[in-house]
Amino acid sequence: MTAELDLLVVGSGVAGLSAAVRAAAQPGVRVGVLTKGPLEQSTTRWAQGGVAAVLGGDPDSTDLHLADTLAAGAGLCDVDAVRVLVEEGPVRVRDLVALGARFDRDADGKFELAREGGHSLPRIVHAGGVATGAEIERALVAAVRSEATEIHEHAFALDLVIENGRCVGVRAALADGTIEVVRARNVLLASGGAGQIFSVTTNPLEATGDGIAMALRAGAAVADVEFVQFHPTALHHQRMPRPLLSEALRGHGALIRDINGERFVDEMLPRDQVSRAMVRRMIELHTDHCLLDVTGLDQFDVRFPTIAAMLSSLDFNPATDLLPIAPAAHYLCGGVVTDLNGASSLPGLWAAGEVACSGVHGANRLASNSLLEGMVFGARVVEAIENGTEGAERTGAMRALDGDGGRRLEGWSTPAPLSAAAPGDAVAIATARDDMQWAMTVGAGVVRDATSLAATERKVDHARALANGSGVASWELANLTAVASALLVAADARTESRGAHTRDDWPETDPDLALRLVIT
Image (tube, rainbow, N blue to C red):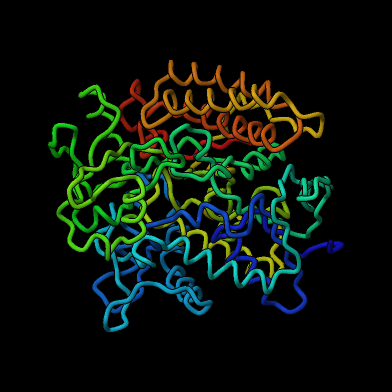
């Protein structure tokens, strides 16, 4: 193991790997990647829809992309962060092409562009129809394997190592079972989201909020975690993670119907609005699902080969069947607060991608902005480190820490470091995890209220008490409960409905709450 790295990347999705590739291209820079699965296994690999970017040669503009993003974010996007996203995004897409990523093109060699919910024009580039994440991951993994100084796969990042007020590395359980400190001058959290705090999710099993939980334990500021985007068209099926029926289907004309076959919502609205409308109709009709009608889409197998193969494996025929769907936890809009360079409130610690709160998404992410965010801000982290930037600047979401569009929450107790003691009771831990996930889905899902949040907190507290041993099961449960608790504290304090946060007992939007709720 290298004595000290220049950059340690925690996670292997698009944000982390794009940063690692960029940093490793600099002569003499020592870059490490640490991930708890194989390098190829990340939430990025599951991303279907594509990358939203204005690539030129069409009526679109970055101003339109910015306006669509701000509209979806329901008043909480940071305009400067969104401007960075839409203006630098096209360059990062071309960087991926240079690395060998193959996006779909038409007969003339131009990018095929799709439209998704909340976008005013088609601007989504995709690969293999709806296999964009897998193609991006393939290109990045190949580059990282050839360039990185060291790669730690099947390694669990336990906690950040803090010395003299600066992050200097990560304490991790490595693949051989030893617990070591991987030291680095800079640590980039790019560990993805926390979809596994819910029982119904599109996220892989690895998405347990590890990076956000480590940041909370280290005292770094976290914000916007009450805004969990539920994807409206997850296939209602026992398979978990829930198979995703891409938003691109609706962009090509798929219709959402209730169980009586009636349409009730504009399919091209932002995801939070569609999910809310579906839940309301499901409650009204006493059912647990709606239906997606794709029978009118021509050449389904050609346009969407990945989805067609998945449906066939589950005995669905898209040519004749109405597909059962229900909202599933999909994306965490908040996370570790960063400035426009990706710097956190803790010197030496950076964050990019779903683990971060950059200010881009606000209260609800615009479809297909997530891969773009990872590519853009992962690169900005590396540029800032190369330029010798130390500490966070008062830009982007970081302004919230000074009271500029933000408010610090009281009553938060910092979680204890992860334990290296004897493993806990495996059955009890698994049961507590299931119970907590179900409670979060029922009480803190698409629709919430004060009573449901309080009941959910009791389940989370019970699960936290059992997560006091060593081993991945205990560690993941501890991380899940840390993020769930932060979400519940913020959701209880946000006495309004805004974006992906809906309170039945506070149905209106409160102008006084057009700010970030910060936990630190």
